[in-house]
Length: 85
Picture: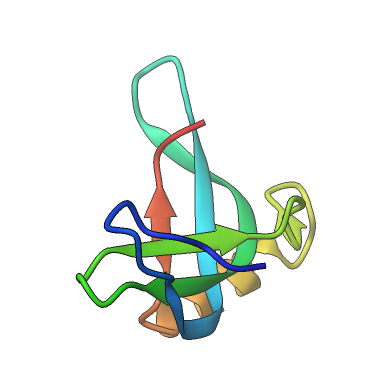
């Protein structure tokens, strides 16, 4: 699959295996870790970037290894933290 930027140029792969954290809101307004995905980040010559993830997360908050996976993702220094659901 190829991705096209709004400037009309194709994105080129920048990094594979980028961890993406999805959070969910609580009634008090704070956001909590919910799901972790792996994605690929692409960059255009104009500087625009996009990260595309798999349809399904590789781990969710209720799974026993979630805390460890989240710590590893944070330690990678590439974690994209999303407060949008």
